[in-house]
Length: 73
Image (cartoon, helix red, strand yellow):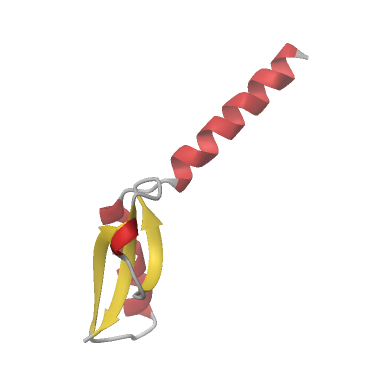
């Protein structure tokens, strides 16, 4: 029973670490996806979560502290 609890605790602790990406890494991944789809003339900007406003949010990073916003040029 202790082994099962230990395995579950380890599994749960690994998932949030994987989900909380660094902003630079996530921004690069999003840019690659947009480029692959042929989308041109855009900017991606990392802003604090409370400063995103009405902008189109395309990602959240640094454990939710920042948002990545998309803007057309």
